[in-house]
Image 1 (cartoon, rainbow, N blue to C red):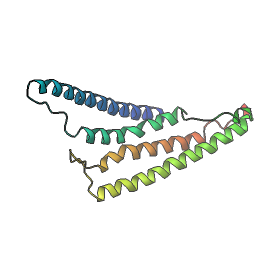
Image 2 (cartoon, rainbow, N blue to C red):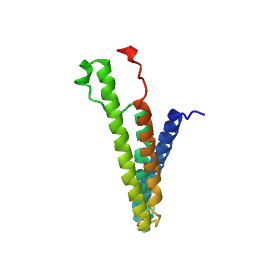
Image 3 (cartoon, rainbow, N blue to C red):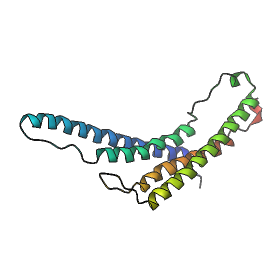
Image 4 (cartoon, helix red, strand yellow):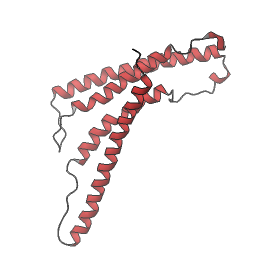
Amino acid sequence: MRIDLGLITRAWAITGGVIVLSIVFVTSANVGAFAIDRVARLYGTTFSALPGYEDFVRLAISSAAMMFFPYCQYQRGHVFVDIISGKMSPRVQRALDRFSLIGMTAMALFMAYWMLLGMLETRDDHALSRVLGWPEWPFYFPGLLSLILWAVIAFFQIFENQDPSDD
């Protein structure tokens, strides 16, 4: 059985997009509630905005923010400065590419390690969101999984296109 990393990264990025869209919808509803409140005040009454809106947005964006990185890595969409390397031989360019992929893999694993420690500390501290009272540590999982997936993709890309015949 071969794992299709492209399918996984697309599904993961779409999930991140759904979370971002939920933030947009909740933000729109909250802004609408403020507008209704302005009108309601003209008639001596009030209309409440969404309680815990800031908690939801903070926790949701912390989950969604990194969910796009694995797809970007899969597409090789990260910024690469090609000022000098464009004049180098294909063999040197491949070596630079592999070197940067090794660095990307190490960096993603380094960040995953520290995010895991942060998640465990947040769980041990029983940290809760201020208004909604949601535990914060589960919202680390999407970021942690994103970093691991990012590292896996970068690692496998190190070994792609090793054909020396394209020199």
